Length: 192
Ligand SMILES: Cc1cc2nc3c(=O)[nH]c(=O)nc-3n(C[C@H](O)[C@H](O)[C@H](O)COP(=O)(O)O)c2cc1C
Image 1 (tube, rainbow, N blue to C red):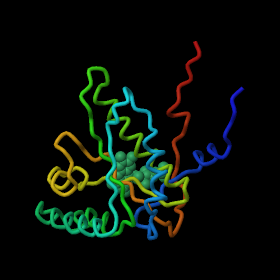
Image 2: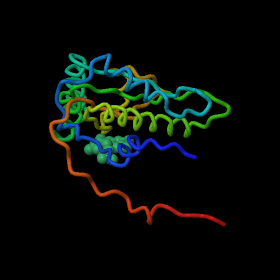
Image 3: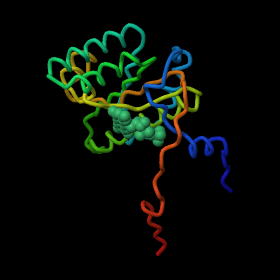
Image 4: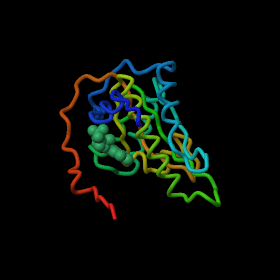
């Protein structure tokens, strides 16, 4: 007989992100963040390749990144509001974990499966942060795609890319839930 975990199911059936702009301090300290990272690192990973890594960004590093993002947006000639989004993502963040997809050469595991695993790590990290009582949000945006920024400022290797910036902090308000998918539209039941 299956042994249910009602608390886990209740969490999964009601979980929702907290918009980054509604997050404030305090952010989790190292002691609080470690089990969240540990939970994320338990993500399914075909071939045990660990095709991802974490960069924990906090304090002065966030201010430095905000400044670099703003400068990069200006250098790219982006509209002020677009450039500002990249800058504010770090300026307003209590703490940010950059989840880096770091694919490994493998004769057995296709690159796409390593990408899936990196995406799954982001959701696991988001859920572990939410389950620990923090507000959290998974963002990307132009700043995650800009090779110069991610390589020069964040130190990614050329074969790596950002799977997500996971912002974690204290929530100031819980947003209303958003409409969820109609299961009838996305589920096919095949019995014979
Ligand atoms: C890969 C990925 C990137 C995202 N990037 C952004 C983003 O840059 N800006 C944004 O407003 N939302 C972004 N989102 C959506 C937010 O995470 C949003 O809060 C989320 O869809 C709400 O989900 P939930 O309520 O089910 O937790 C992204 C989602 C994913 C999966």
